[in-house]
Amino acid sequence: MVKNNYKKDTKNILAGKRKKISNSFVNSPIYRGSTVLFDNVEEMQTKIKKKNTQTLFYGRFGNPATFEFEAAIADIDEAYSAVATSSGTAAIVASLLAVLKTGDHILMTDSAYGVSRNLTKGLLKNMGITTTFYQPNIGSNIQDLITTKTKLIFMESPGSLTFEMQNIPQLIEIAKKHKLITIIDNTWATSLYFKPMQYGVDICIQSATKYIVGHSDAMLGVITANKKYSQSIRKSAHNLGSCPGPDDIYLGLRGLKSLSIRLKKHEENAFKIIEWLLKQKEVFKVLYPALEKDPGYTTWKKDFEGASGLFGVILKNTHKEHIYKMINNLKLFNIGFSWGGYESLILPVNPEKIRETYQWNYKDLTLRIHAGLEDPEDLIYDLKNSFNILRKS
Ligand SMILES: *Cc1c(COP(=O)(O)O)cnc(C)c1O
Image 1 (cartoon, protein in one colour):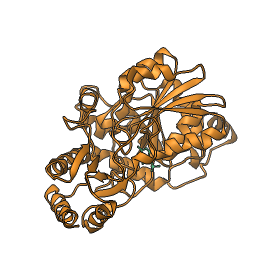
Image 2 (cartoon, rainbow, N blue to C red; image 1 turned 180 degrees about the vertical axis):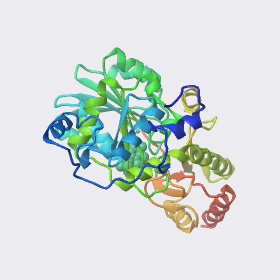
Image 3 (cartoon, rainbow, N blue to C red; image 1 turned 30 degrees about the horizontal axis):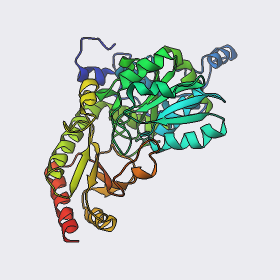
């Protein structure tokens, strides 16, 4: 259905649609259901064999809307296949458990999302799987960390909280040389701004809760894989019982259709806010790889097609209590976890407490900001008022 010569935005709109729509609504209905009925015993027996192949079999294995969402993500990602999970976290767990076994060793970026880090210290450790964290800018030196037990490299670029870029093509090349599996958490960029499959990654996970759903009203995850890992990933997600609810799948499908225009506006708003922030004497640094001064800029420019609306800010010489007061005074930026919705968010974060391979020197002064879809002038006005409070305190 998706012709190769269509432009990007057209391809995204067509993604996942396998048939021409006629005599029906544009969108898939919401399928509520557990039991699927079969015409006879023989059909039931055939379907049992096909249950891990996007076949309508039992609610937990997906419904036609789930399959459409998966096909759409696989199309956009240029992946062999995709499987939807009940959250981004479920996608991370299903991917790791699909390929790891007791005695394995993994390499994980020190800038990985909290859930990924915590898994290595809990579930994976309890299973006898060991982890070595690596610095995001490690480059070819990652070879020194590979042992005979190493099974995979887990990447995330830019990293959670600290936004360092990684040389993903180089890490994948090294992984291939050593026959290691590669997994990437691509939530920040989404498949529209970075396509890890083009660089040969094996498995790519996204928290669709963020930009794909885009309205902070559902939890959803998705894993894409190449042909080699496609089946094991799907089985792993199914074995874990990770099935997204019908409404959440619907919201994921709907969100995908406007993802491209929303991302452009998030990026534009982020740039405008950052431009203002960089002129304030209290701002020491902005962490955003799309800025020319950012250490990750060259890598971002080379591999990515755009930037999303999430970035970090380091303030200088300011007390924690004063920053908290400033945050509490904001009217448009709300305090809350997650991001990727239409609303602007702000959080004080403490990366210095969780980095193990290098020191994060900016104690207690890092903020994480998500630029929402409001008018940037209003967002800047809001920040301006709160910075005045900071100045007076
Ligand atoms: C939020 C997030 C996740 C987890 O997604 P949930 O849907 O909240 O479980 C994973 N990775 C990154 C980078 C995230 O920001």
